[in-house]
Length: 352
Image: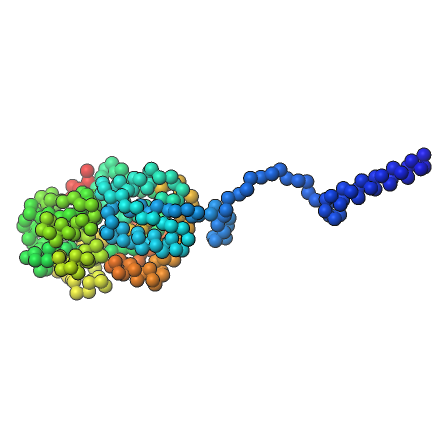
């Protein structure tokens, strides 16, 4: 019995030794966990683990024709961000419907995964909502992510037009509203609100004027240069190519101060027409449901971009001023502007 007991202790000790060796040199190990699927690549640049973004090409939708202000700023931004992130960002022009065709594609048809971004601007947001009771695109469809830049409103007429100052032109327009033709992407576009505010300030009959629909500034300004419309109201940058070619002339700019890009051109206020506050802006937005991490990453890159001297130089070449606003400020500005333009549209009978 004693011998059997000894052999039992020896065998038990051997079993313990084998088990200990298998678990790793005598260290206690936790029980094995069940296999888990491999997690996707993550982005920890913000100090937290997030799904990597972007990992492939991004479409930057411009809802206007190539060559206009929104398009040119979008291309400069796409170039900057693609280099910053190491992924291609391709600008895709989808003009039509006063900016609604491209906006509807980006905000309603594309997946809210961050790989389709909208070049949002004043015409297809606040003005569109103000001008149409049943707008196809509203603020409820999108997340205003970051504003990039702003532009000063300018009034351009044909180079050999008989007016040499804005006061005389305004007097003629007031007396002959039925002869005033102006270009716009639609009845709720930037130009339409520019004309409506101008006529409100000079107490003229906006309803008697006639709009000529175009696909954007690159189509609009040449129409004025060719004598197919009397006036084009766009940003300085959008008018500048035809201005430099001496095909059109700018009679006035909006705002309270002269533009740094056209210091010799007086404001409308200097010429006795006060209250022209309409201004142009552009930025980026995404459809509702887009991951917050995507929104934050775009906020950060636009903030960096608009403070980068090289990018600011590119904006200045387009006669656009940097005007960064994060998502919260951007959204608040849009809400305030929408209310103002809705009141103006109602008063001018633009709202349909």
